[in-house]
Image (cartoon, rainbow, N blue to C red; front, side, top):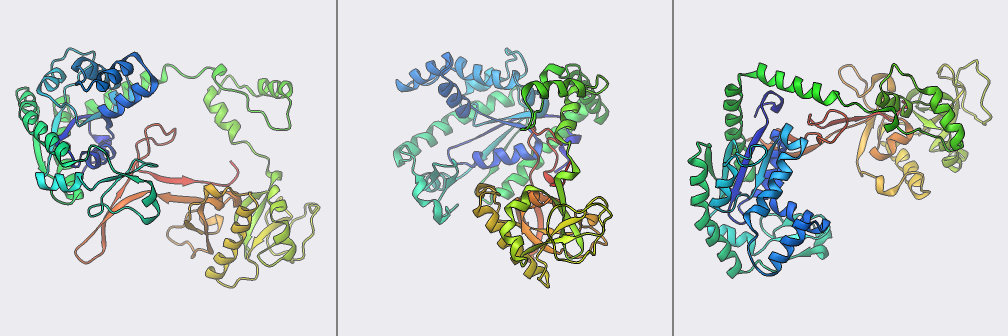
Length: 479
């Protein structure tokens, strides 16, 4: 499907019977089209937990076994969609709502502060027998909320003790939910079709990736038709420019940016320095970013593999590695070719590398002869740093990444082979560039090759590159 930046925000209603796949297709559509998933159940639980008047009224009604009034439910939906910037700017997807013809009519009535009328309606269908088979076997992980099934989505062995079954997943309850849906869906679709809203039904008794591809094609065609009705790509760009201009009118004030004090400064000393730093020609938030990126080169020393510099590490790393450095096998202190006065440390390695301004470096795996041996040696160093608490155990990714000379960045054409591989979470402590592409899944081709991958996008709440493909590049070097 197309790059969503070239399409207008899309408004989707996703409905279907119990266990029809809404919980799987909804987040996939959200990722593909940047629209916000709005689930009535999630909104309702949030209101109840927050003990709002609406939440208390809803809890009382449900305790009696009565249906929630449409005004209450529609009020929550209206507030979430019309009262939030993200849904207005990026579009929305109503997951499993409306549930009655009256609710569908209310959505298209135009009685709310902003339009709740969808651009299209997606209906997921599964045979009743498949619904029963899935519903009566599904389990929920109490720690993550993920749903599993012994046949269709087997759970990992290490979470078996956390799995629970829904108490209302009984044959009688499932049959009633199927019957309720079948009696309501005709009126729901009629309400939308009477208002000329594109509606399409999809058979989800197949791979959900296949269903998703079909649904995405339909939603994209609706978005393209909406774009043409708006006046084409130029109208979309003009709207985006207006949103940027309006958002830039309210910039942060200096008072919004707190002083960044070091551990060695008293509060008064910090505030005096902070006042001296203020530059009225630079926006306050940029000042804060620059302040966070400030560093003293004397607080770091180079990291070598062989005679190649691969990173930087803070001086306190020398204390953390003191035992390992004393042995000189897994790592060593190396003298550099420099006219500067040597630091007050001992070293035995002859000077071979010139890094201006530095007289000593940490050399990793000095006795190793190849990439595999270097990787194993460095892994042992990382294990000791984790055991000593220098690297938090919970930060470990159990994922190794390639380490290359700093001069070659992240690799690319002409770059030499990697010197070694290191635990990703440890790379920032050695100032090595780390990178990752979040691949959520892949599809194999007819010959078994990987034909395509599903790559996630960055959250819209991210300060950098929101909504773009989530190719994360994180530099561990100073600044």
